[in-house]
Amino acid sequence: MRLPGLIDPHVHLREPGATHKEDWDTGTAAALAGGFTLVLAMPNTQPPVADRATLDRATALAAPKAHCDYAQFLGAGPDNAAEAAACAADAAGLKLYLDQTYGPLRLDEMSLWKAHFAAWPQDRPLVAHAEGRTLAAAILMSALTDRPLHLAHVATREEILLIRAAKERGLKITCEVTPHHLFLTEADLSGGWGEVRPRLATQRDVDALWANLDVIDCFATDHAPHTAAEKAGENPPPGFPGLETALPLFLTAVHEGRLTLEDLVARMYTNVRRIFKLPEQPETWVEVDLDATAEITAQTMQTRAAWTPFEGRKVRGVVRQVILRGEAAFEDGRVTAPQGYGRRIR
Image 1 (tube, rainbow, N blue to C red):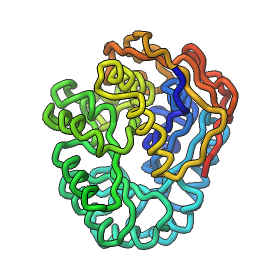
Image 2: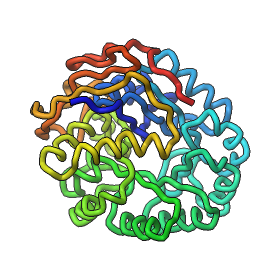
Image 3: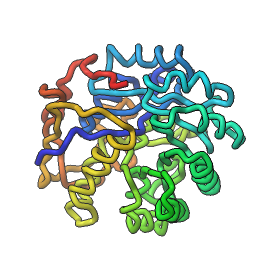
Image 4: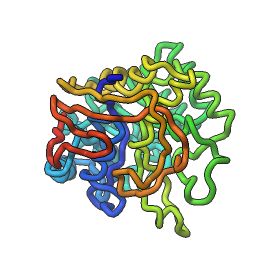
C-alpha cells in the first residue's frame, strides 16, 4: 500500500543544547523509519530559537545532518514580537507557550500573547501550547484578533468539546492530537516513564478524543526524546519519543476499524500541508505492508532516546520503504538517505 510522505508538525530534535537525547541526524532518521518525510521542529532548544541569529544557527546545524526535509519554528518570547515577525517567511511558524515549558519562552500575561497575535503575519502559522482554561483564553484571543490559531496536543474531553464549539461558531481554530493521548491513559505508565505534557489523561478523555475525531485536524507525535536514564531518575523530564511508533499505531487502528486510511492520510498529510502551508514533495511516498504484524521495541529504533512508552505492543502495519524525491530514503529497517539529503523547506 502506498501512502504519501507523511508530515509531523510537532517534533523536538534537541539540537542545539541537548544532543545526548537527540539531534538532527538521529531525529530525522527516526522520522524516515516512521514514514515521515517532512518534520517541523519546535523552538524550545538551548538556547531557544527566538530571533534571526538563533534561527540561522539551528538551520545551519540541520543542513549537514538532516536525512528528511524540515523546517524550524520560532518561539514567542516576552519581548521578541517584532523580531520574530521579521523572520516569519523563513520559519515553520510561531510557537506560543502559554502553559508549562522550560526556558524563557513561556508567556504568562495575555498582553504578551496579544503583541504576538498582532505582529505575526496573518498568512503564517501560529501555534499555541495551551491547556484547560488557557486553551479557552487562546481561542478567545483568536476570535478577538480574527486570526487562525492551531492548538497543539489537545488531551482532554473538556478541551476537545470546547474546540468543537469554537469550530461550530466559525472560529478559525485547528488542532492536533498525539498518539500517546489517543492510545495511553494515566493508568498505563508509572513514575517518570509516564511524565509528559500535557499529562496523560483518563479513559474518559481518551474516549472523548476518539468520539470527536471529526474535530481533530492533525495527528502530531510531539516527539520529545529523553534518555532512559533521565526518565528513571529522581527528576524525570516530561516527554516521549514518538516518530517511529505513530504510523504503526494508527495503521493498527485502521485494521481495527477505528480509523479509515482516508482519515489517516487527511490528518498526517493533507490537513498538515494546508494548515502549515507546506510545499508538495515531488516523487515522494511511503510503502507500507498493511497485513504485516510486529512488536514495538526500542532495540530496532533510530532515535537516540532508546526507549518507547509502547514497548511490547503488538501492531499491524509496517513501513517497508520510503521514497523521498525519487530516491530510496528508508528500506527494510535501514535509513538509506545520507546525512544532508533533507532540504529546508522554509
